Length: 222
Length: 307
Image (tube, rainbow over all chains, first blue to last red; front, side, top):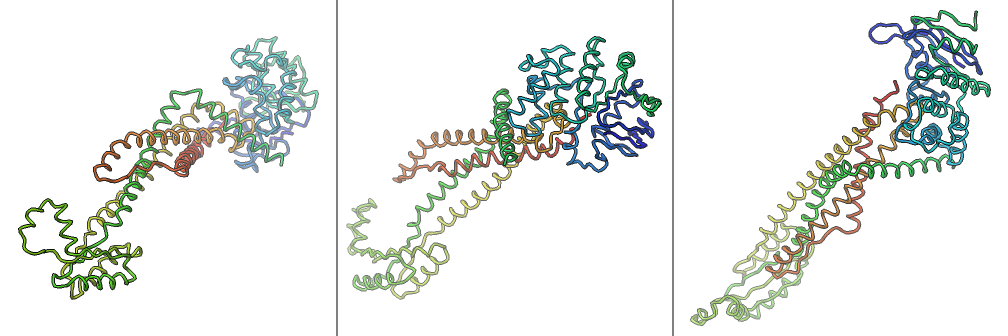
């Protein structure tokens, strides 16, 4: 599902965000990406979402080598990757429903199918009754759940999340992670970057630990 | 088929959504629309005026009539013969003979020198032929050639040809037309720039939305569409405003023009925009809007990438 092969990412200015990172994530896995801030977690996710391209090495996502995806191919590529952000990036001038519907709108789904999928996604995150609300009227945890609903609404095979619990208290964090587990159970591959070691150690999924741009531990291989 | 339908629906949705966006920020929209409207009304209004002037000069076709004064020795019968001969020419539409007695009558009636004429012992006026050139003799050179040939006739005393001022007027009109063309091009560019700039600001304001759309896989076309329709509405609204401005302007001018026409004993009235011209005005507004938005989108949307 995701394969990194000797990936180097160097930002202008000379700092190596990733230095020869290699790992492979199979379909159906749920993987945590951990490490201190600045370790390169976000860079890995940005390479997966094709927000950036590797300086050297190969990144393969959903069977596609990102080096072969041109500018025009990026939208299609991204439709197969659901993304959850720490700051959830909801559009403040649209209702919860319209935010979740956005990826479906982009795919040109019909109105009835869109409504069905949006309601299904909102139901899964437990916010069905808030579909007409404006995002600002929701709590931080609820906003994050809307962000997750948007990421899964179009049923992408892969969902990546960057510090999805970064702004949440432990109870809410646990709730969010449980939500991810439920999606994983129905076959969605998940890659979640987090520094909340305490929480994820209890959950017991595969963990890839990064430090200073390199993989220093992978619970899958040890 | 389904794809085409969805595509059409997406466009329709964007069309409506863009109008909604315009209406929700009435003040700033109005300012932009006003600028576009004025920029469109100026060339359209000038064009209307120039076209009216063209119609006016068209009604002066009779002004290219010229008068052939015959020698005093030519008698009336010979004058009639000459009139028939000239009438037979292919480049002559009609010839009217004004006999010397007739001419004297008219002169007496209209000149105000009636009493002075009584002092004359004999009629000083010659027979005259008023020649109207054929309809193909529209260009000034043909008319001068015809006039020269008639002047060469032995019985001709003088050919009085006064087309110079019509030619001058038409030349001035040509310059005016050309100037309006140039103004049209410049103001069309101005409209494109104004709309482009408005759309650029709009793109900046909606940077977050654009980023999110790109992140969830929105194609360039999808991301661009709302801005194109916004530009379309701006242009169209500007076109409507320009039309209203023109209607108002023509109404304000109608009185003075009727007054002037009355002084010349002419039934001339200002001709406004026809249906097809109104349509062309609105369409050019919409097209310029779309174009300006397209240029701004092409320039600025690509620069916005999710970070």
